[in-house]
Amino acid sequence: MTTIINNEELTTISKDTDCITLINVFIVEPENQQLLVDLLVKATEEVMCKLPGFIAANIHKSLDGKRVTNYAQWQSIEDFRGIFNNPEAVSHMPAIGKIAQSDPTLYEVCYTKHS
Amino acid sequence: MTTIINNEELTTISKDTDCITLINVFIVEPENQQLLVDLLVKATEEVMCKLPGFIAANIHKSLDGKRVTNYAQWQSIEDFRGIFNNPEAVSHMPAIGKIAQSDPTLYEVCYTKHS
Image 1 (cartoon, each protein chain N blue to C red):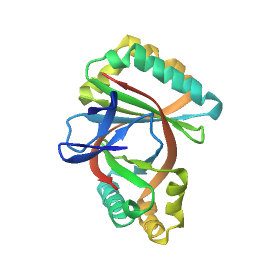
Image 2 (cartoon, rainbow over the protein chains, first blue to last red):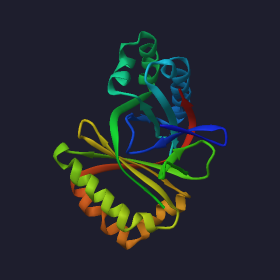
Image 3 (cartoon, rainbow over the protein chains, first blue to last red):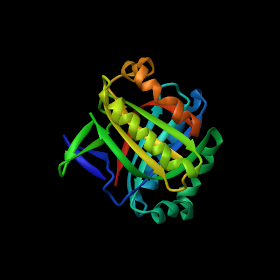
C-alpha cells in the first residue's frame, strides 16, 4: 500500500491489505555496499517498477555496512514470480549475485503496534 | 514514521526521517513459527512499546513458515540499544532464543520507488 504525505509517495505497512511483502536481505562486504545499492536501484528503475503487480521497493543500507535490505510490495505471489520469467529482469541478477548473497522471502503482515 | 488511514495507524517508510529502522529476521522451524509470533507480540505489548523512542513494530510471517521478520522503527540508535539495558525487555529474550536465531540489524532508508 502507498500513501502521499507532503507530496511524497510512501509505502505503508498494514495487516489489512491484499498485497504481499518481499523482504530480501542481501549480505555484502562493506566495501561493496554502495555498489550493491546502485545495482538494485538500477534494476528497480530500468525493469522492476515497470513489471505487472509492482507496488513499491524500499532499499535500506545497514549502519554496519554488511547488509542491504529491500522491503518491497507486490500485488500477488504470481506477480513476484513473474520477475524470474522476464529476461530483462533476470539480466540484472548476475552482477548482484557476484557481490552479495540474498534471501528473498515472501511475507504477510500479521501484527502492527505503534507508540 | 506513522500515518493514520481509515482510523488505522500505519508505519510509513521514508528516506526523509530521523528515525532508524530495525529489520530483525528470525529463522525458525515452521512448527514454531506461530509460537515465535506470539512471543514477539507479547514482548512488544508488555515492554517494547512502552520504552523511550519506540515508534513502531510490524511482525511479518513468511509464507514458507521458515522466517518471522520484525520491521521496527526507533527514534535513535541509543533508544534501540536501551532495550538491552532493560531487565524486563531482556527477560523476554531467552524464550525467543530457544526457538529462533535472529539477525537484528539497524538501517537507514536510502531509496524508495512506487508504481
